[in-house]
Amino acid sequence: MALKKITSVVGTCISVPGDDIDTDRIIPARFMKCVTFDGLGEFLFYDVRFDENQKPKPHPLNDPKFKQATILLSGNNFGCGSSREHAPQALYRYGIRAVLAEGFAEIFFGNSTTLGMPCVSANRQDIQAIRDIVEKNPSAELTIDLVNQKLHIESKTFPCSLRESARDALINGRWDAIGELLEASEQVDTVAEKLPYLATA
Image (cartoon, rainbow, N blue to C red; front, top):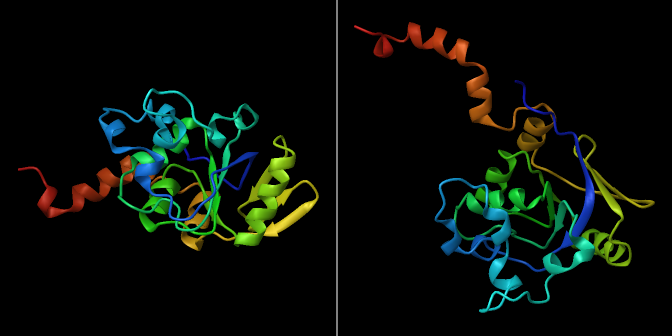
């Protein structure tokens, strides 16, 4: 089955402001003891969302106004720290389908792209303008247009950017290298038969 072409992402937003939000803040290491990624969403930002008695603390993710949000707004160098794949997986399993920030850590960016979760950049002033709109109207939908690299919310439009290799992969349905390889299994077998070091005795 061909991968979905992701040309845009539309959804309401939630803001987790700040620079250098690292992968341990996104998903604390003690929650990484899992066989699958399925249940990671409930532990997203756990240590800043809950106290030592597991009681909710004031945090955007605990605010009912933003419960349905699918686009996360943040600052610069989002996803820095370790290379753990669990961080973008936790965001995705929570329901986030795109992240808009000033910049991203390299490995986090790559891991997110292979999930089909675009990491899009914009400048600080434009993200703050979008954040202000969302604070006033949490139901305002943001459209991330990956083809034209534009952000649309209410009557406003802002520029955004995405590394060209990732943008090309997302809009042309080539964002999951393993899925693409499995899809071409017949071609893989044909090539393998021609390789002398893979020939059966």
